[in-house]
Length: 479
Image (cartoon, rainbow, N blue to C red; front, side):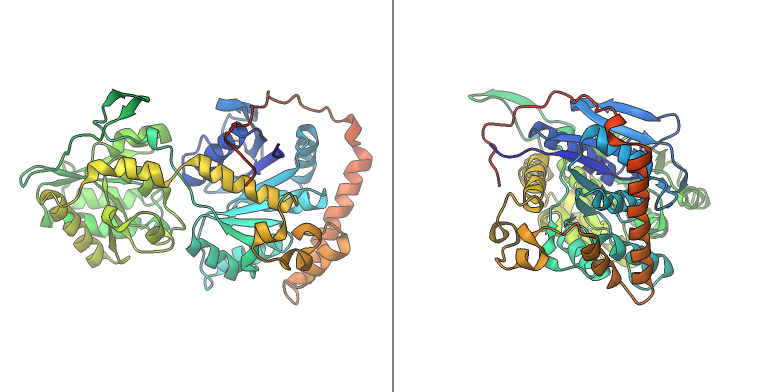
């Protein structure tokens, strides 16, 4: 029987905030629970949501009250999170710490403290970052610090893997690519009847709903309204698209600092009857907004994956998106029209998509079933579980890394050593000055850990009762 684990997903970004990372953590956790593992989530408090909450499928969430400074990221303190993190880890008997997102302070601190406590660690990167601006340089340095002593790294696209390997100076063999997914049944087209079949009830493709020459085409945008999401590009392109194509309208959902720019553009161009601003919406409302449209417009300037365009295609929308980051890897070419991240090209690409729909050249009614076959959270959970088996030595080096000698290079079984001297050697190579600073942080972390062990003995910490574990699916096998 395949081994199961006690896993802590740690990230600043989680429900009730909507978003791709938040959905990824929830769906992955839920499917790992279905496979017999124990999973908890550690995140910060959201307004009045503090303490412990239980979500569907018995997923326990710890909302830790910490100061939030920007875009739901907590203030980095390095050490102050350690006491409560240690308490949670001991209470829940955690074996693997799985951190998410480069900009999550909780994630980085949990990986550092987890290694100090002798736990296996995994990091999933969901974003792309540059190498030139000050913010990216600082983020990359922190990432290099944390990933110098992590067991394995997961990226959501091959472009994201290349970016992360360069930013953190990683060996590509210790980085796996596991994409995001969608629950396709939650993103059905508007008309999706069911008919009885020999296997029960199976979905029929919806009837074709192609707009005629004089029908109104609705373009949907659902995004956080920030610069990196291409909101400035969208603001400049909308008046031109509406001018070139009179029988079109926009529905825009989302919130952020760039929302005021969109509102000013609408007023200046008197487009109130053709552009509908919905403001922030919950994730469960996304499908209801998408099925009101024919085209989904995604003008992002940088994107590691782009889960929302998979959701849009699943809803039967033709996708217009910028050809940046990992987006070209996400959907096949017949579902998308690509544009350069420039105003003129975005306007032209949207025009091509409108013309293709009016000429009935795109079979959007088939998109849902195609997406359903391409992406599933069950597959993501199986591949993530394989990473856990690899870092625990359940798989041979040849099976896990595809390279027989790689485990010898890293330590027995391909695992990173917990010995302090080995950890300091890895951190010392992070830079002339940064390496010494990182070594000092690790030494302080060890001293703090020993102090906590003496002042608050682990035998005095109550062990939490586990939610009843699910029986592992019979068809499931160790991969």
